[in-house]
Image 1 (tube, one colour):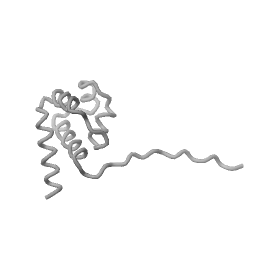
Image 2: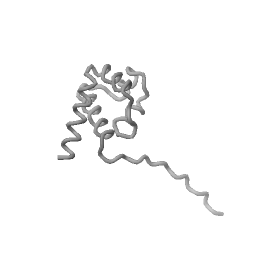
Image 3: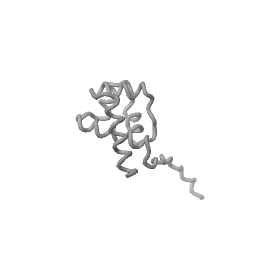
Image 4: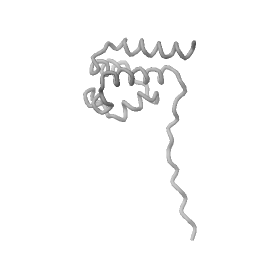
Length: 94
């Protein structure tokens, strides 16, 4: 009796370093520095925890509206996240 074919698992491709990945790293640094979980950030901002994870891994790119909402929950200026992203990108390009 032949064995049934195995179901292939979907793997998400992790993006190379770029603005999306750097933004995600910046968001994660700020979030963890304030000791806020992905779950808490998501709940307080009106998003699912998995969406926060996708942003932090650079898989999803947030809209400006989302950036403003996340920054408000983290009690930082949206520009603080963007400035940190630029620093991370500069470090990589240098």
